[in-house]
Amino acid sequence: MIRFLIWDAGGTLFDTYPSVTRAFGQVLAELGASMPADTIMALARQSTQHAINTLARETGVAPRRLAETFRRRYDAIPPEVQPPFPGVCALCAFIRERGGRNFIVTHRGRASLMGLLRAHQMESYFSDILTKEDPFPRKPDPAAIEALIRRHDLDRDATLLIGDRDLDIRAARAAGIRTCFFGTGDHTAPADVEITAYAELHAWIVGRE
Image 1 (cartoon, one colour):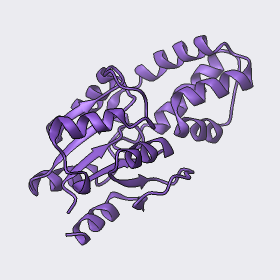
Image 2 (tube, rainbow, N blue to C red; image 1 turned 60 degrees about the horizontal axis):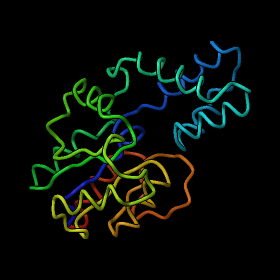
Image 3 (cartoon, helix red, strand yellow; image 1 turned 120 degrees about the vertical axis):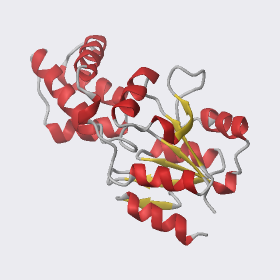
Image 4 (cartoon, rainbow, N blue to C red; image 1 turned 30 degrees about the vertical axis):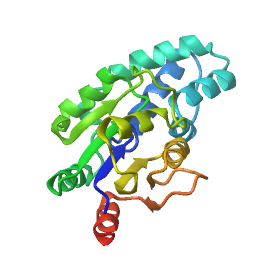
């Protein structure tokens, strides 16, 4: 039985990629460059840093300037227009109602994440959160997940990580827990379940009881 869910944030809990893509597009225009939106989104789905590095290399814009301007543009986008994906809140509530708990492990900053959670009234769903400010290496290193498991004495067989990137799945597999890949992005790491809608994951969890 799955009782504990460890969530990634951007692209998994919240539909952030349209806002990230828009911010990068605005930055490039401001700096006298351009890139197709679908290309930007594909880069951002790998990681924000990957997008910065690649866009800087392809356009000739200094990486530091691109990163600083992107952060300013993205931070100005209201969290209210970056909603949770359909079914996220229902699934979090279902896990809690069954005596389980929800957690977050993300590379996003704490202030940004808490802004999203508050804007969508989701703070109460989560028992613990690890962000980029916590002293752990980035995924796919499993250290943050391992720390969360130890801190809350989680049963690995009852724990499932949900993410939208290879690095999420690789980190969870290294930590010895089950994995769910969400979305339609490219990935190579095998997951225990792959979904494009959270109703599918809800049914999968119920089916394992």
